[in-house]
Length: 383
Image (tube, rainbow, N blue to C red):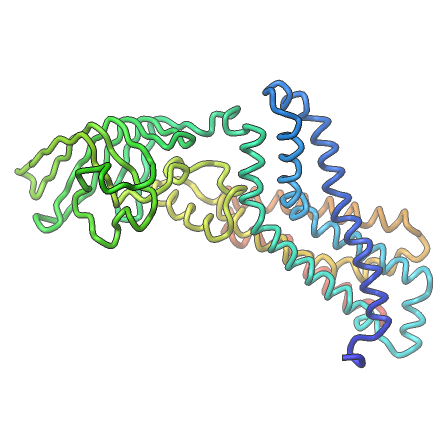
């Protein structure tokens, strides 16, 4: 290990990580200051406690850090390599038989660590963003907790027509559930209920069960279940038969979707992880909703952390040109590259959202562009 990890590697990695940590922590602080300046009056109008506002900004740190990681890696790469170049440390390394590619290997390792950090922050973001929204009462102010007159399709082919849904209370109004059957063994049925509530299952609370329910889908295994109130079931084995039964309370084990999944909440990309967002996209596709923007947002959860390594490969050879321009040129290169990268992300995201390019492919276009340019610069740099 001593022959692989040299004192020079530790020195280079230390310089890189020092700047990287400063940028990773500094950018979120700057974003918080700007956001407080812009939105503090709005939060005070909602009569939010100051402690809730402060906690909300703390919960917003993972998302901000996730977004600025590529810029932080670029700044750390440009400033550290620019410093090494100005002080002739790279020249001394080359004179000792250490190539430029070998010299920046610790920085490549640091960029990989930032990628892992990005994936970890991406896993923390959904719960943190959800808590932040609760503290700032974003849903209440935007009316995102209620939706009226919409249709939802479940995984098992049932169609729900809902007059009103309140995700905060976990209730539905004027609910119709329709399942198309194939004959007497698998009949068509239509359920109407005046209202429904999503709550913990209790065997004694619901005397009736949904038609064609199976033991495997028993509500006891899920913890929470929809209970329908004051309704009627129409069972139609064929076109000429209609068997109707009214009910006061019916527990539906086949209705497994949580209130927010039923409402197809538009804030889902911010409050769901990669896997959960995939399930959400499938549910929205069954309901006939355009999901391109959600597919793009889902893939960006992977593309942005990976970009940390790619943008480092782009910035490393570029930073060798800062030896005469000093820190000012390094700042200029970093800011210009960051702005171009963010503009490219926004552009390709819009293309993916419109379906002009496959959304998953659109999310990787900025990484591909900078990866190609970085490879060309890395090959051409004097080693």
